[in-house]
Length: 115
Image (cartoon, rainbow, N blue to C red; front, side):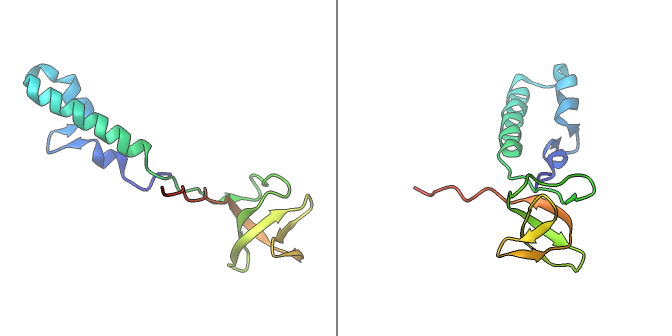
């Protein structure tokens, strides 16, 4: 899921969507169509470069790879780093303590190095 509203970015003023403008291209001047194309490229780049938000995965649908650290949400409304040991979820900082995980999601990507 993306953090921005891509549909809103695809709107062009009161006219509607970029697709509407492209379908009626004969109604517009060359300059207008050129501006629409530049805007379309800008929007495409903006959408593609937005971070995504992972969704919670119910454990009834899928279990993460064994011993792969993930973020877990428990039936006690606790959240933390957990892993599945092949039998159950355990907290990564206390490998023997059972975590009653109901949902999980992958850990986010680490930050990119700043030069």
